[in-house]
Picture 1 (cartoon, one colour):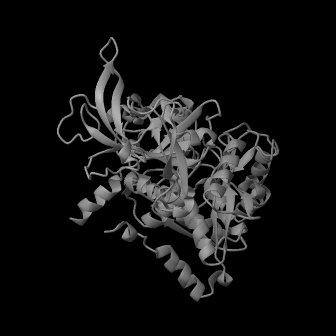
Picture 2 (picture 1 turned 45 degrees about the vertical axis):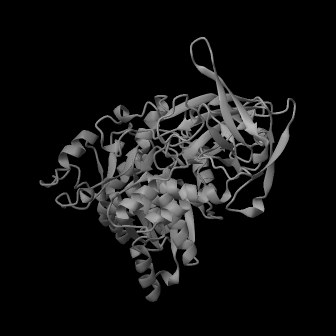
Picture 3 (picture 1 turned 180 degrees about the horizontal axis):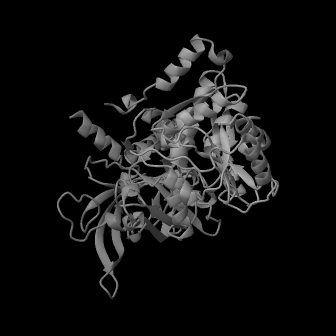
Length: 561
């Protein structure tokens, strides 16, 4: 299977929408929503949902709402709201004027709860949370009714209003839907729909001391916004009967349809917001935007592009069953995008000094270098060449094995955009470490070819020592050593001790002196790098976004055999 043929996805959601439009359901409208809870930063899994909801709405000339399901003020912060908006915009989507909060509907939700009470379909329960769990039953055993289940509507209404007025302590009473304690679906066994919680809310302050539960607020918020297709991940499939029950019981302006799709599971990646929060709080990573994190903020800081993430989300498609996607595909999408758009430069990560003994003292030449062979419109640049250069430490071996074609004593190699050079001597320090190479160059080989037709087997990148700009380079690897860290008993035992290596003595081309945070480059022969926000004019900092080696290509070859 070619990459272009890689699962473009079961279009079962589109099929549902197409059928709805044929029947003129919802007056021919398609309105979706992306409804995150503001209790953490978004990650690559949320990107799939964002792309799906906004793209579907655009395809059908509809709209997609951004709604914060802010019904649990104890875990929600304005910081998360701001970061989520930034992430959605960065991915290339715009909700326009359709920004909403579940808290916009608190009064209406409360009125709906009173309607349920008056209809005999909700009651105030005094059982403790532990007792509610015990009464709930199991998958094989039915639950048993709460002793408070048969309270009159009048008593329930009075108690509920007193809950709102703040007469009772936190956790002492809840409002429950009155459905069926013997239902095979545990979600239908008289679920809690309101609890007492004295926590200030980021928008409503101290106005409320009771808050609706997600399963109550979500379908009704959808209905109030006249959402047509409520697209969510598979873990909510068992909640759909409850979603529909609330819609059926109440006089809502529209009956949305809940549709579930498989969430994104990515190898070597943790998708649990709760566990990601632990990584941040325990200082295992340097924050939500640590480039090793799967958060959109972390991916952005590492150098991922919105186009690559959107492409990835399209390629993995939409399925009805969960599966694990190889992170190599995400990296492949990134390489494809960066290859087209990232300027080429030369940077030496672990510098080894090279002195060209027969090069004229004080001479500086400007070599013409191509900025991007994939895009001629990006033009060329000048790279200074001088007597003293730096090459990569691992581009030289004193006693090379077979198939090592780079520089060695007596061996000739090509310098990219420059000349052929030959190593004539190796200088070591007192500890026996190589600190300098003495070489000669052939002035007739400028541009990379010899008039006499002789060939060399290796081309090395380099920088001029007198002109190079010092830089710190951060090399990132997977944060975890196992494919599915979420399945581990203790995910912290799967942490990769080599997930970050900091190189403080790198040298880069002088053109990078003015590089701005967020800019991406291909360091020739090494990979793609991005300027980190920590970078300053005094100290450049680059993050390795991804290496040049495309492991996805290897995976494809195996699949095609």
